[in-house]
Image 1: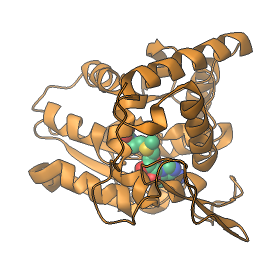
Image 2: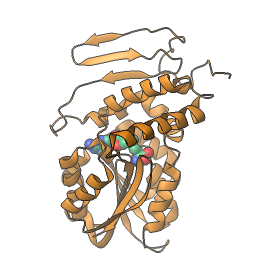
Image 3: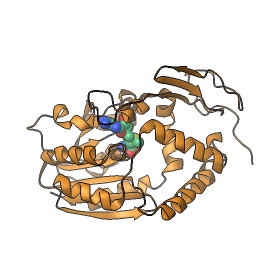
Length: 297
Ligand SMILES: C[S@@+](CC[C@H](N)C(=O)[O-])C[C@H]1O[C@@H](n2cnc3c(N)ncnc32)[C@H](O)[C@@H]1O
């Protein structure tokens, strides 16, 4: 099968190493930079953060400031998480508001604006407060949104300190998030959802579309195989990182370590929602290791 031999990233980050050639591997203290053995430009910066130290920039925010990561983010998401389109549709269909209602939503971890974009198209008079810690991702969100950006209020910062990013007097009908809260541990997630619930008006809805981990190690192992096989099927002809099972596994392991992924099980996620104060919550959809969980305040 023909593999793509030229870098997928068109712009001027740096010339990529040739395939099979590893260059520029530096390790200075806590910062490590390296190139993958791959023609796709993928420069990594790995830093160790204490996950509970909220005075430091979150591990998962720093990962989303890396230029190559940001540039290939949406293309990678389509290979790695094709369900995200469906997940956002389920979230939108669940929200019981008229399409012309003048509602306000809070998006936790907006990234390049995938969910916010769909939300603003679905609810033509809605406004969104978009929170994300990565300026680079938010720049892409602005570009993606075009004129819709007029209905968005961007807040750059760590959503673990949500209350310092949005005024106490700010309230809305919806809180949503996609592929962002799995960067948090149980306690952090409960605290963030708890802060988000203070933003929600009574009767408002909170919906999270995200990754989950299986309770059974045996099932998790099989689900991971299904995951990797799917990425190879979708990605092998367009990107050498996805050329075979071994390269995909290596790519995912490094990605998850850099991002500080720590998905909970579905049962733990529901427990977190309830501990945070969302009494009426349920799994709205799930498949393999992805789920849409939501509820009403
Ligand atoms: C995987 S991306 C998801 C983006 C988008 N919601 C989507 O569905 O494509 C995760 C985003 O969450 C942001 N993020 C992660 N941890 C964060 C934190 N503690 N505070 C604010 N943003 C954070 C990252 O900067 C990144 O843009």
